[in-house]
Amino acid sequence: MNVDRTKCMMCGACVGTCAQNAITLHETRIEFDDKCINCGWCVKVCPVGAISED
Amino acid sequence: MKDMKYDVVVVGAGPGGSSAAKWAAKSGAKVLMIEKRQEIGSPVRCGEGIAKIWLDELGIKPDKKWIANEVKGARIISPNGTILTLTEKLAGNECGYVVERDIFDRELAKDAIRAGAEVMVKCAATDVIKENGKVVGVKAKYMGEKFEIRAPIVIGADGFESQVGRWAGIDTSLRPEDINTCFEYVLVGIDGNPDFNDFYLGSIAPGGYIWVFSKGADAANVGIGVQLSKLKNGGDAKMYLDKFIRSKPGLAKGQPIKEIAGAVSVCAPIDCTVTDGLMLVGDAARQIDPITGGGVANACMAGMIAGKVAGKALQKGDFSKEMLMEYDKGWREEFEDQMYRNFVAKEKLVKLSDETFDKCIEAMQGVDLERITTLEILKAVQAKYPELIKEFEDLLM
Image (cartoon, rainbow over all chains, first blue to last red; front, side, top):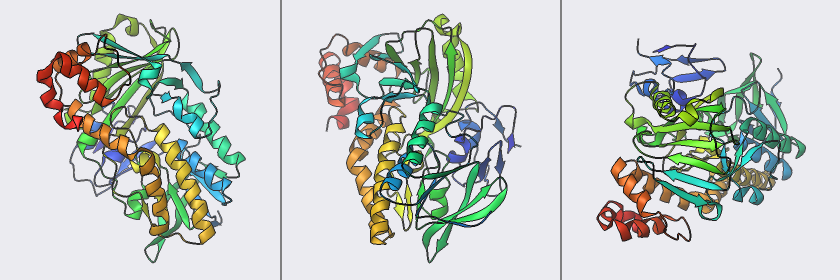
């Protein structure tokens, strides 16, 4: 998954939504690990549309 | 960084964490509260509308420092613009103050510190430490340096994106139907009404609502919460809000001084919020009201109960799940029933059409409502539009 860091508000919505717990919110960036199954929920939950599929 | 030892480590310094830290410290515990951000309370992730009633119960004195505005009531506005005005004695919930959460959170942290709690900021928990299946502390990182904080009691108050519960094996997962994603502007220069908070219902905010929480005659938090299961694309939350603001000239003229984003759970109470050596509090425990999306009051209440139970556990030297269940029982006694009732109501509300909302709000016009309970609303609707009542039959029970 891709993150547009110029849009990301570091709000944690994606982290809390991810059922696989594949997203980590470091203070100024989010990071996806290999638990990601590309379900796409994080894409939709992001209030500003900062996340997109590869 | 040297490894540390405490009686209680609280992960997260929001309202839940600070409440837990304060009450644990008051009961004699040696408490460390850690906050991953460099500033407690900032940036804000909240609509900032808070009910007055519960502040007394929790020993929190209203303070001008964090009160942006005091409202007299609420207005609920249906899709066709029909307004239902609820004055304070009817509304009760989520009405009262509109606050500055960043200042509020730091004032609560100060209370915790004055009660004896220690604090570290820019210090993130990276895992729980387990021994023989019990939680005995957390691994943490401060300014890049890793270390351990050993404590027989860990209180996870780490918010919507909570990790502590997951690391300890407590299921806090959510269905997309139980996640509302939110976006808000703090706008200045609007045509505002300092007396009322406004709630806009309908397809303008699928599965949620738009709020205008007044911060004065010309300022307000204007925000939206929408149900994840109803969204099609990333950024929909902001898209719906922008569309709404454009349609209201009195708001469109406003200028933003903040943009705020975040998500809330709108689920039924979860099965269990404790395990050996661990209690979850606040958004981390999914203790948010499913209709309003409000969680500050519940977090503070639960934090207080957790802090007190921590004190008892330390006195007894018993940190087992059985001992800590007193916290789980305690918060359920306070607000589980209301939370569950509001969850059932939310499951209904998200299915209503704009026409049905219009009819319900219209049916309640000019009715002398004693109290704004679900039952009173349904009776009023039934009197005017009996055919609608079929939809709400199970709420009447």
